[in-house]
Image (cartoon, rainbow, N blue to C red):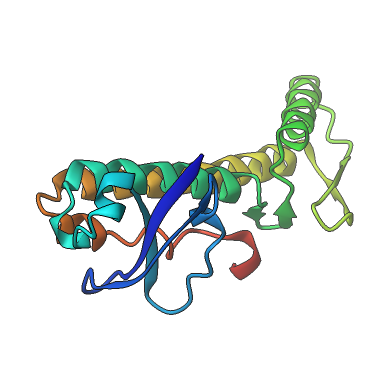
Length: 181
């Protein structure tokens, strides 16, 4: 099944390129500069409907799907902490939560023996129970910031009334990212 898409200028909503290909093709497009991509119905593609004349609801749904994909990618891309970047893949977060449980137990016993934790770059940090809890909190707060950013984008999309206003919500840039922190 084919997917139909338009690459556009986020600032103006101006259509730059139309394309189609197997499902998932739109997500593979290179978005340099101020470009965005949105999927459109086959009917609008075939009728050459101008991008700004496409139903904002259709465009909003497409951008929200892309937003969720981008959010998921950043959520597992690493979390910035005061000790470095923590791997935020689900199993690594589970390990971090396990370490917090151990840290809480040790604190309740008055034991400040350090705990070791392997960071995303495979370096090992040795932390007191309190530091372990702080690091975990910072990691969770970073990942939560990614979800907050996505919610803010959704609010902006929902407030947009026209196709141009929907397309002006730049979901492709501005995300908190571990590699740029």
